[in-house]
Length: 212
Image (cartoon, rainbow, N blue to C red; front, side, top):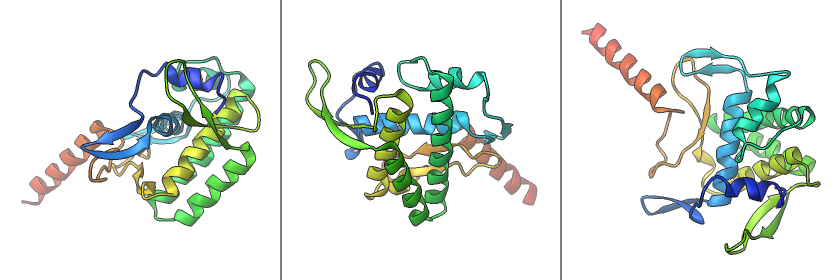
């Protein structure tokens, strides 16, 4: 990710610990967590499908830059060209989540490796004022679109290349295919939101009641 633009954006998210912890379990480094959370937001906003029981059509055309700007930390302006690039990246990222959900880890890895190559993703030590040095990820150039794409690709390599790949999930509720990163202690999350979890529980309750 671009140190001059993206590091400042991440700083606007708020002061986070250097690692995300869930009941004593360390999951993702805070920078990687920001990248994965942003990947989830991009996929859920920019891809068609189902959302909490209703059909969802992603923004396109003139609405695309604003939709992406609203998702990126800091709400930075996004040009039409950058928006198209990031929309293309997002379609590939959805394929990664879908492949991991279906147990097709080899397919997910192939998509991520292609993203790493195309963006020229590379690690670099960066430091915000008053903070310790931290590994961030940059692209082949300092553009916003390539920087974020490279960072997200790098974060996905760290997830899939560890025992945390199973934390990349696809909502299991009916008529919903939004994605999430599972930060639960035992890795048992199945839904993108409490809304979908509640819908599923209510449907199961009604089915049991009707069967009596």
